[in-house]
Length: 457
Figure 1 (cartoon, rainbow, N blue to C red):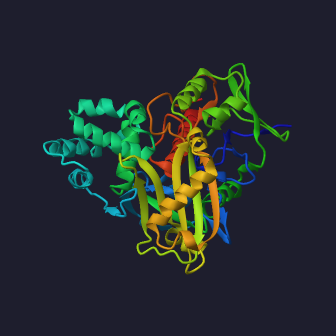
Figure 2: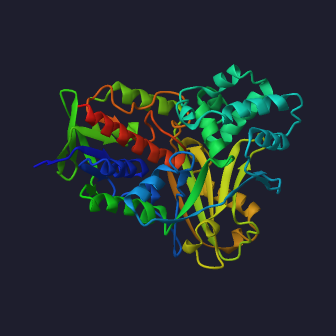
Figure 3: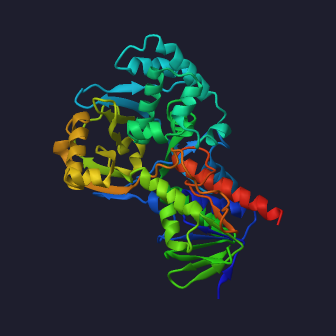
């Protein structure tokens, strides 16, 4: 027999767990479906030698409710411990040997001064234009900025009267923050896609947090347990076989292990590719997003970890971005021993390195093994003693979701094609913020909209 609920939440990442937690606070009988053995699959640790290493450091958008997941933790009284990771952003051009720290900027004038200093050519008369346009972007209220995910950056720059040099600087900055190349950024990057990460990480509108002992076991598992302790359900370890739709109305879900659940509301955090597996017929609202994502080229994030015995890092609290000669993003490196020292043996360093490329580009250079050697070479140019003192390594790969930064179709928060189906993941039309807390915001705001809609039914 199918179990009955008020709301079924599909997917137990940041968006799904936070949606279920908010629905719990709203008093809804809620089922959270985790397709992996435990919630927070993408927040699981990487095993490097004897270390269990965090692969995610959750953002907290401090301008909005003090952060979405943070606010849920407070309201549900979940025992979460964390430390703000005071990372200094740094840039280096490949082969230069010079690392430049990027200070946090409290104003458009400060950020314009920094960009002018970093520019390879004098800005001349464009310096004033750069500051003026930065001021306009930094003055956008957060709620309005979140709504500008469909406004093309280059169109907005033209409306602001940005000259050619200023526009080029904005597009180049967007390339490095979102991993798009210049042509893709000019075509697809939104105003939100540029200013949300700029304001979050260069202007202190967000924090990066190290959760003890890691984001999965220290944040999302306790949140899921709090959901269960308040009488709601978490089903773990079985994939969704079908979102059950009858006469255009979502009525529940069927799982691969035979379990079934019914509810008048199904809240999905799935992306378009996963929805394509569980919805039949597939609504146009999903098909359009899937087609657009294919146009963006299918980028993947490749991460390489190296545990070292003798590498020297004189300034460990740094996020070091390596750029190519043309200013394009090449690689990012960081020291996990500084961010989460409780995970790394004393006296050792654990260097993480990250690149974002398409699978086709990686195959063209000889595959992941060749790529990892290149990543090690670049990290060795930054950390003295790195290459010769590696004692253990690990690597990860996962899809990089670009639609959050880009214009183009989004999944509507409330489906226009299937009554009772809601989209409350990071790919939905309502998101407030960046990265982990951006996904959490989609879940929380979606849950609140569901609760409000239920009052009028």
